[in-house]
Picture 1: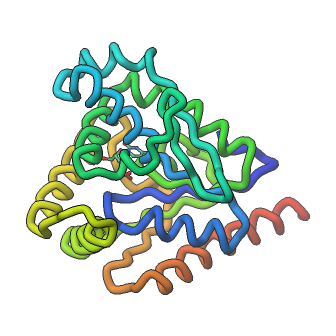
Picture 2 (picture 1 turned 30 degrees about the vertical axis):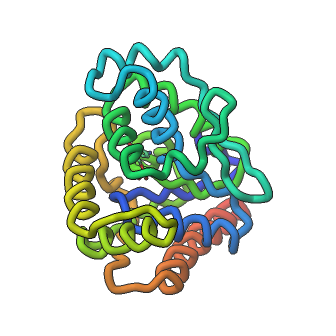
Length: 233
Ligand code: DC
C-alpha cells in the first residue's frame, strides 16, 4: 500500500488516453519510478494465450499459480518478465491487448497482481498507471489523476503508435477494439475502470503530449508540495 515515507501518484483512465507516455515523462522529470501496471495484465494474458486460451475463465484462474510476473528497471526503462522470459515487446501486440482485457476481469488474476503493485509503491516514489490504481491498488495515493480523451482521439494515437512500430493497423479496427475494451473494462465486476471520487480529471483530447505532461506534472508537483507542507506542520 502507499506508505508514509514514499510519494505515490495514481493515474487511471481508458486505453490510449496517453497514460503511459505521460506518466513515463512525468516520472523522468520528477525523479519518480514509473510503473505501468497494464504490462502485468498483458504478461498474464500472453501466458494464457500460450496455455489454453483466454475464452474460459476457469482456464485463466487455473493458470494463475503457474505464472510469475516481475517488473524490473533496466537503465531506467521498465522491462517485464514472464516466468523469467523478457516479454516486454511481445506484450504490446494487439492480440495481447485483448487477452489482457479478458484476464483482467478474473478475480484470481487481480488478487495475484495486487501485492506486486503495492510493494512497488511501498518501496519507491512512484507514478503508477492502470485502471484501478486510485480506487483499489493505492486508495491512499497522495494524488490521483483520471486521464482521458475521446475514443476517436485515443484510437488515432494508438494507430499511429502501432504503425510507428511497423505493426499494421487499420483505424476502424483499432477504434472498434478500443470501444470493446472500454466497455468490458468499465462493466466488469472486478475492479471496473472508474474515476476515484477524489481524483482530478484530466482530458487530453485537445492537448499535445507536451501540454499533457505539463498538466499532469503540475498536478503531481502541487500534491507533493502539499504533502511536504503538511508534514512540516
Ligand atoms: O493499459 P493497457 O492497455 O496496457 O492495459 C491492458 C489491459 O489490462 C486493459 O484492457 C485493462 C487491464 N488493466 C487492468 O484491468 N487494471 C490495471 N491496473 C491495468 C490494466
